[in-house]
Image (cartoon, rainbow, N blue to C red):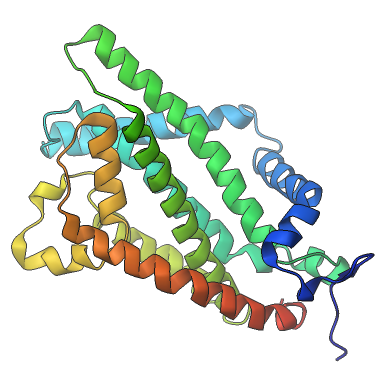
Length: 281
């Protein structure tokens, strides 16, 4: 089979830097983002309003099950805020990763009939999920304001807190992008990967302090939390937003190691698989 070259009127795109490609193809990237977002809510009654409904419904269920029935401690913060804060950030990670794993397969027709930098599709997924994340972040902000006005609950924010929040969001986006891209490359040839990822995400969910506090982790299970790259960002995000328990710095190490390994590895592997994507999908 003749290998296809990704070309445009400026020459061979494979010879160009990824950042240069993104800038040159920014309009096409925006169209991919717009298509992904609009298609997700196509032929739905409530449409984008599901972005507001989903976190509220899931948080309400968690509040009843884990807050009222199981009565898990929430570090002195209102249970609804505790679970909502966790779910907003976890949803960004989980959906970004899962959606990207199946990206090449679900867009196979586009890859076979159009020439464009293949890296744009995974990036558009992250853009879409970030857009939804900031919508759901508004829900969290309104929930916090409600508790401040109706109860004696209070939070403290400063400029440095906001910077740290954006650093956490940036980290989670890059981590989900790199792991999702790696999974997408593997899934393009081995279709079991998406099922393994979806199954594995359930274990990671309960192995991350989302519905419980980091302070509840037993010492004999601490190793599993030390190797989980989402433990520190989730816990620190809750600490910054609602004043939950400050996680120990030791949980940060796995996050740094994961991002330093997964990002270059996923890019390198993608550059290898990119030449054969049309054959795989």
